[in-house]
Length: 91
Image (cartoon, rainbow, N blue to C red; front, side, top):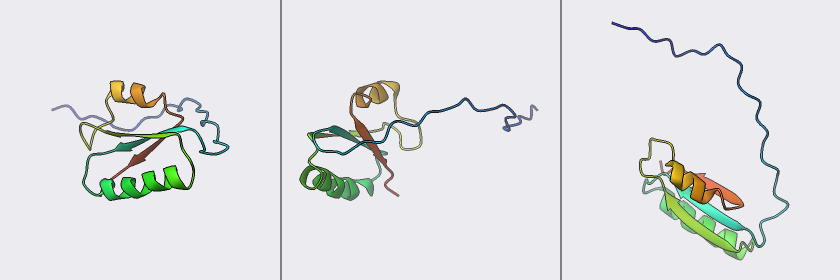
C-alpha cells in the first residue's frame, strides 16, 4: 500500500489579475456552463441583461463536457478570444 500526502509545502507562483474592464458596451462575452440544468435559466437572464442593459456586442454560450472536470483545453482556447468569460454552476 502506498500512502500519498496531498499537502504541498511550496510557494505558489505569483499571479497578476486581469485588468478590470472599464465597461461592457461593445465587447464580446462568453458564458461557460458546467452543463447542469440549473445554470440555463441563470444564463438566459444574464444574457438578456448583458445585451439590453450593458450593450455587449455578442454573447457566445459554451458547455463543458464534464461538469466535475476542468474545461477542455480547446474550449478554453476558443473562449480566450472573448473579452469577458463568465462561468456558472447549475446546482
